[in-house]
Length: 130
View (cartoon, rainbow, N blue to C red):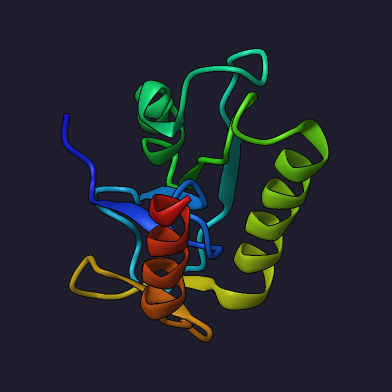
């Protein structure tokens, strides 16, 4: 089954700091959805959000929104940086969004969306330059 899905929504400045948003296919109009936040496994060294999107239907079938986080892994960063990225994602979710189901089936996210495209491009160029 297909579920409405927004892929690689940035929550922080690095290319790894993204999340996927899965929403219920037929939400009740005017309701506020519960949110499940999933931090992928991989022993801190491998896997990404893309490896665990299979869990989304478990939550969206029950009317919840499923957010699957991505973050940098070892050896690219150390554990304190990984924890900071995950905290940043939770902060983004809590501050930036409040989902509401609309009558036409869309999900409206109340909050502030910050475009960090320029910051991400600058950091990507710096990382490529070494």
